[in-house]
Amino acid sequence: MWNNFFVPHDDESRAGQAGGGQGGGLAALKGGRAQRRSQKMSDSQDGKIKLAFLVCAVGVTLTVLGVGTEFWVELAQPKNFGGNQTCQMAHYGLWKVCVRTLWVADVDPERASCGPAELPGESNCTYFKFFTSGENAVVFRKTTSKNLNLAAAVLALLSLTMMVTGSICIIMTLSKSVSFFLKPASFCFILSGALVLISIVMFHQSVLALLASDHTIPLHHQLSWSAACVGVAGAILIVGGLFFIILSNPVSSWQKCLPQKNSAT
Image (cartoon, rainbow, N blue to C red; front, side, top):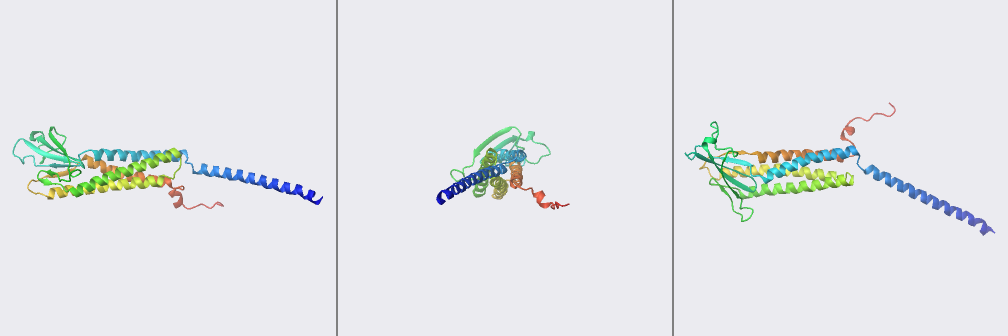
């Protein structure tokens, strides 16, 4: 009899535990869903990320334009150096050098050197051989510095690689609607911008080494529009990377700096 009396109580306790377990499981499931919703980005944050990515895309485009063209520097002889009706100048980038023969009559009378490269004339372009056979190039009897040119080219290629990696991180961020990949993307874009700027410095050092290799022919040199594109691109990429760092923080840095108001007041 006593056994029959206690059995219902055991059944009731088991039922209560089962109900409590189901209720706890539902609560945990709801909490997990709420946590996942909180990790999702809002529409305003998504728009800010797209805007910052657009800024970085401009930097990537300028970098590709500058790296792929051969107008990093212009080397110009004095326009009356040969004593005839033509003068010569050269312009080159990371991969190719072009020597142009221009008419002296087309050059600005107030300009002492031959050029600019946009004037009509004959052009002879060749690719640098230190990427294949390791030979230095000779421009107006002056020899290029192979190591400095290679360093500038390698840094530019590494910068492009970091840009692609950062772009992949941002695409994954926008597709998954999570901010986990923002910090890696910011690191990639900031590093790519720094590498681009260092590449310009290395290239300029290679130009100075070229000019110092032979002093028999006076040359006027100036960095051209390709180098300007790469320099602007480096600054834009660094700014875009800083934007991604700000967007990756869950709390605005301005709110951290402002004093917290007392709820009682």
